[in-house]
Amino acid sequence: MDIERLRRDTPGCAKVAHLNNAGAALPPIPVIEAVSEHFALESTIGGYEAAEQNDAAIRHFYDAVARLVGARADEIAYVENATRAWDMAFYSIPFADGDRILTTTSEYSSNAIAYQQMAAAKGARVDVVPDEAGGTLSLDALEAELAKGDVRLVSLNHVPTQNGLVNPAAEVGRLCREHGVLFLLDACQSVGQLAIDVNEIGCDMLSATGRKYLRGPRGTGFLYVRREILRTLVPPFLDLQAATWKAPDGFELRDDAQRFETWERYVAGQIGLGVAAAYAADLGMADIETRVTGLAARLREELAARPGVAVLDKGARPSGIVTFSVDGHDPAAVKDAARKHGVNINVTNPLSHGYDPDARPAAVRASVHYYNTEEELERLLAALPKE
Ligand SMILES: *Cc1c(COP(=O)(O)O)cnc(C)c1O
Image 1 (tube, rainbow, N blue to C red):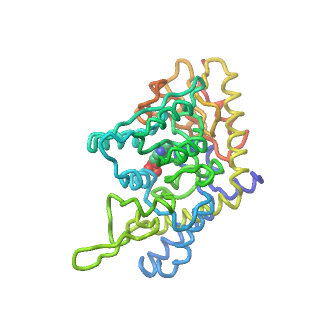
Image 2: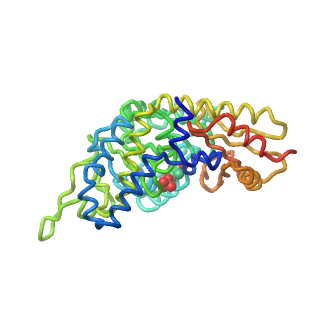
Image 3: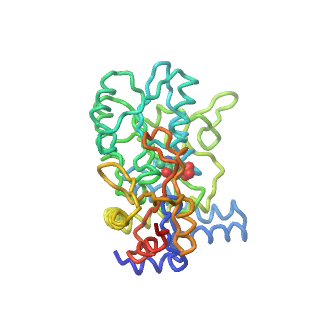
């Protein structure tokens, strides 16, 4: 990868060492221009007229996202963030009394809260599959649970927000297919960071956000739903985009993934997210993944070598998210110290991952992207408080 060129294509790189890509990454110039140009057009000729004029760019979103994740364009919905994308899939599933939902210890709390709500409303049960010794979800334990025959859904994150592991999504997908169980993958932190193919993973539904590793605008996200199950899922909310009214008292659902959308949307964001997806796919997700995981491995190594610093990441396969603690220093103070040196990092919130048995009060989180440099990692290390 031509890192210098990619940095010139990212205006933010001249201002800050941005190691908060799991929070929101810096967008590249083509994304910035696509979003601002469409908003400027709306302001000049009118929003509906601008949408007509940019119809091809709006539709390009479906093709670009489909190409990025190995799906078909009619399996993609544009949704305003990953949470709502995930919700539209999850709340479409007709749970019944006694149905079980299986998840993992690293699960994101918004998802966990939805499981609890569904459990209370429909009598479903939530079970957290235990980890192996290394901290990765145990596939043997998952298989044993699936064999019991009462599992309706396996639902987990691909890359958690609070620790640098990658869950074994493709192995989980294989087990789900063997047992005929639905598989919902929260790929919020993995799309744009790791090479993803929905058919290789074997998930039925996948949700992601625009602003994280994909480098798209905030307030955007998407949902993938496999064609074979799409028509069996009735979204929890319907509007005249999702369905057609058959007067006087009937309606017909769309037969593509746009049944999970609403008519009104952030159009400039949809165009920008399409551009971001094409940008990542053109660069090559395999190269992006190699660069991101390589930089993160280097950062972990250097952190681990420092007295008083503990790297907290778990799991067999590491991601671009690096979590650590600095003895005697509050994570928030470490974040502030880094900010003073022009380095953006973040802290984790234990309430965002309530099932995690090792939940600490909080940790420092540095999340790297391909446009970061070794020099920026050194800047972070230099900014850490001394013992
Ligand atoms: C950020 C995040 C979400 C939520 O994404 P939004 O776009 O903020 O709705 C869901 N799951 C994981 C693992 C996340 O890191």
